[in-house]
Length: 101
View 1 (cartoon, rainbow, N blue to C red):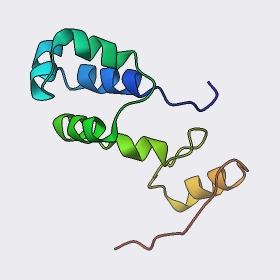
View 2 (cartoon, one colour):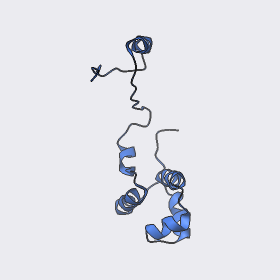
View 3 (spheres, rainbow, N blue to C red):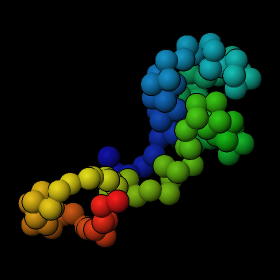
């Protein structure tokens, strides 16, 4: 994948993850089933509609445009020995060691 975001597929995935029926989702965003299926095929979407969809699905779809698609942020809690094991991996960047509370 070239980093291109297909917003329709992302929305379809969230609808599925939330366990929503397409008709219920359609009602929530004030359209019919056919329009929802057409939305799932779209690579782009109006920002007002995306805002409503983000609210309905409780997911910030705008955020996926601001995160580089080739990198991931993973937060791990590890002990000192594991940290040493990871430190040899040049693909990982360590930001800060957090002291125990």
